[in-house]
Image (cartoon, rainbow, N blue to C red; front, side):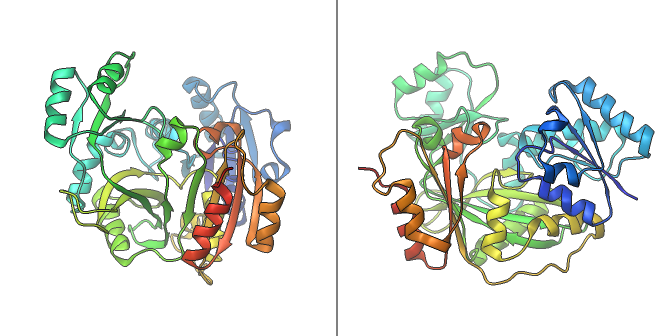
Length: 395
């Protein structure tokens, strides 16, 4: 029997589905987390063969001892994973320490975590990348801005999501940013005018794509965070053929195997020096599933079960799980305190069965996904626009 350790199995709370499908496929499922066992959901408890509680997942020594305990009790570990951006480096360190070869090792991390290093792989995939400068001092940053012009984007070179990402519009913004207590490397990039789109995939051990889909984010997550705005994105009914080609080239350039990934690109909304309107430009790679509730939305959009497809990849290196009809699956995250034209009950009532899920966003995700979620399933572009308008329009 293969042994699979899943770290932080309770967060995000939909990840128990990954574990359940592993168990269904005959793997021994072992969880390590810092939540008390009694606080785990019944679904998660029923999906784990054993759970080891640590006082904090941030404490490497404790987690190390937990892995060592499982090896002592059950033998070698075949897989160790969290499917969580925050823990990617921790996962790699543990795999390296215990010679678990089924995922990224420590030496692999720089090129998949540092935005400046990602660019070399995107270039290998022949995908255009934004010009950049590593933030140092005013004079050198200003010299770069003389070349690309304002606005520019600054963000941690090794960062998660849109946290601590800012748009600088003038010298005053630049001086104010440089005057803050910057304790980590920041990357400065030229501003790209476009819509963020993604290519999401599951690959087998040969690097072959066994499932793909993609999403569209009409409003910037940076603005959602910095302006406490609503959150909008949707799993699209069809991924453009050119984006599929680019996504597969990116997978090959990064050498991705046996993994679920979320690659982000800009679709240019106007002609720019980097390309023509409609062209795709690299943004960043994320070596894990799209965040939050996205995997469940992919299921709705594709009438399939990506949790099962992923678990089939782990267990069998292939899947016979197909796709059904395709739809657009939209996420609206409403920010608390806004006065919406359509109140909660009316919004739900208007869409009836097309409103497939509602609820509160976990506090840990509300910074980027707002506070109350509404997930709708529609087929046409016009319906997408109407669902978004009804969800976000304020008085």
